[in-house]
Image 1: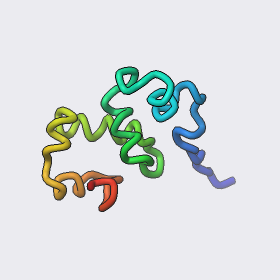
Image 2 (image 1 turned 30 degrees about the vertical axis):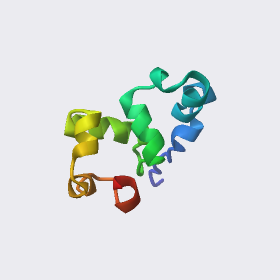
Image 3 (image 1 turned 180 degrees about the vertical axis):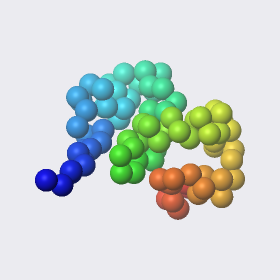
Image 4 (image 1 turned 90 degrees about the vertical axis):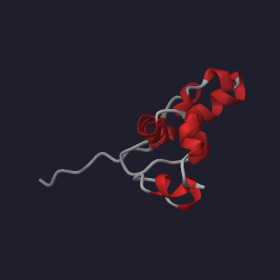
Length: 88
C-alpha cells in the first residue's frame, strides 16, 4: 500500500482562539509574537510549513523584525516560500 502524506490544513485547522489573526482582533498586537505578526502579513506558508513557522524562519535568518523589514527585497526573495507579493 503506498504511503500517503498527511496534508496539513494550516492555521485554519487550529482552534480559533490560537489563530494569530483572531488573537490580533480580540487581544491586540501585544498578544502576538513577531513571528505571528509576520504570519498575518504573509497570509500563508508553503506545503508543510505554516505561515507562523515561515515567520519564525524569517526571524531566525534576519535576526529581528527590524532587520527583516530593512533587508533588500532580493534577500527576501531568496527565502523559500516568499515570492513577489509576500516579499513586498
